Image 1 (spheres, rainbow, N blue to C red):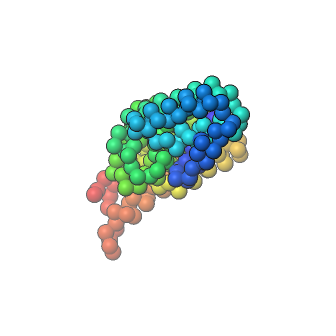
Image 2: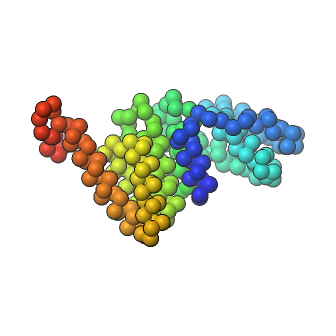
Image 3: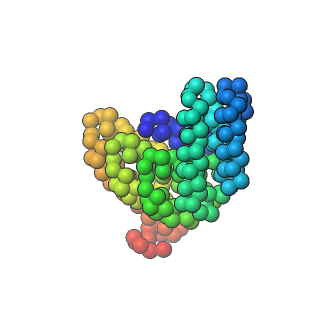
Length: 225
């Protein structure tokens, strides 16, 4: 799970970065394996699944000297997760954000996040279509909380509350860091989550009130538009 969190964070911060193509490691794989993997990549590309993450997975396995059958199985599994992610995201899977949003969704599925949780986050973020970073950050945060032994349902609902209050990518990064700091200091994961959620929701609500304040006037009451 730790490796998954690191990989997902890298996707969120450097979505357009790519490893060397799988062809660079062809000498490390048998001809049969190369043929099988190329067929998988071609088939996935024909279905609209980006080739880059599949090539990266092949390169990762070849670099580690993994068994070729395991590499093929890993690529097949990744194709399935990416296809599932495309179905969950719908039109959002075609956002011009590189592999970031699709990859973050696939990684969340790998971590065990229920599709319904992801769909609720996508629905909440539907008005931020021009900027996928908050949604990517939200998915990263859910996976991170699960890795800290917070139940997936609680993690999903908490992040949904933050996203509903227009939490930015930077605020979600700070939220994860604060919870990690609290746990390191001795707080249980559930207490750390509850404490930070109260603080962040209060801060975000206050910011929203300031945003609604007319020039030279007082903040609008809660619920006013």
